[in-house]
Image 1 (cartoon, rainbow, N blue to C red):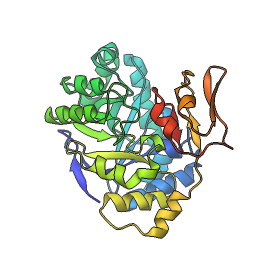
Image 2 (image 1 turned 30 degrees about the vertical axis):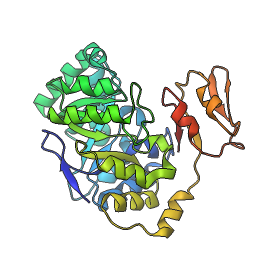
Image 3 (image 1 turned 60 degrees about the vertical axis):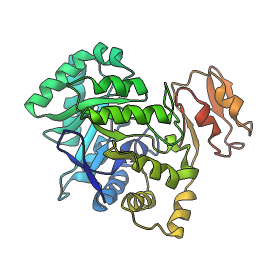
Length: 315
């Protein structure tokens, strides 16, 4: 496994970060022991960085996975709290459920620009105090916006930025992949530590996995890439790719044949663009949100690229 230093934080993180969303109740809903086993496989393969969030419900899986593990593990979490007290409660919950004295990185979840960052400044003030006390080592934001990256680059108090970026630009709210690449370069030049999300476009680029990973690993400003994994085969496949090791055809087949389905997030507003794009007639808008007929869905993923709100994922 390759490692890089995350900006000016001093943390040396693996190029592959374990994205914990996929093992939790929002997606695969693995039992704690099973999910912990998947994480542990990644740790044993050289991954030392885990990304999660208060929303994901995966703290118990991570706690079980790192218990008794012989090496340091860097954990990043995030939440939507925007008040001092709200952020305090979320950080304290993370510490308790992870059974740790500190959390390495804590982020404001899905910030759009300096307006949202400043609008949530009470939460930042708590994180600054926590960083001073040592209960949080580094703070920052996650964002799906080019402007979020550019604006956060100019906020001296923030250490880390977690941007959405992939080869097709799927999910970027205010630009394309080229725009986000430029923003990442600017933020890295400002000394921010950056690690990417959604390199596979929420599963919409699974048919271009190796190309998508080659692209994301070539971005100089990114120290690491958070990738969701929920099976031992996915862990082996991804850790081999990120370590520059060959991947057998049999392993590729196992990963490709894993049963998957189209998932539509609760925040869908029913704009209908996905249904317009669907060539199979599998999508329609009912009761104000998109619905999928799984008998017709071919998992071609064209709908995901059409969604302006990044509601559609393949899991």
